[in-house]
Image 1 (cartoon, rainbow, N blue to C red):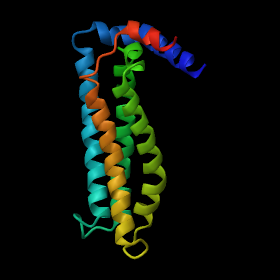
Image 2 (image 1 turned 90 degrees about the vertical axis):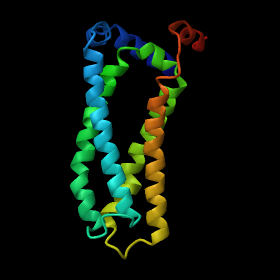
Image 3 (image 1 turned 135 degrees about the vertical axis):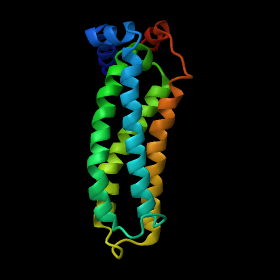
Image 4 (image 1 turned 120 degrees about the horizontal axis):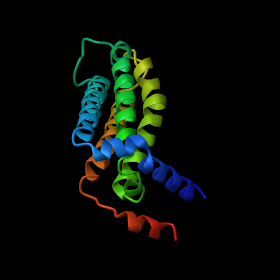
Length: 174
């Protein structure tokens, strides 16, 4: 049932006017992808800055909660840009992405990274006044964050090397 609904959603995306417009244009796909990559760079930088501070490897003169408050809007803004641009890019090959294990891996890591970032990671970075959490916990939280977000990026990078034919997707549903 869920797989069928997901495939229907992917077919709707594929057949949407914006999916067709981006897919059929010479310049729209690269234009949208530029924004996706800019968002990725900003998000990656913010995640790296905050986790380096959490591990006490950089930005030692800044408190972790203050730094988290400063990079928070950049993280949220870049996530919005990446969700919008990512959805538009997805709509150009949604049915192919449905059966692509690289895409599935990226979405799994994205879900886990978002949940982790807005729960455990936020709790530690916003509450780390220098004395509340031990070094082991801070390093572990930062490393898990870096691994999850790296998984999102690696899954996205894998999309360029993993091909799925539309015909093979219909075989998955049987």
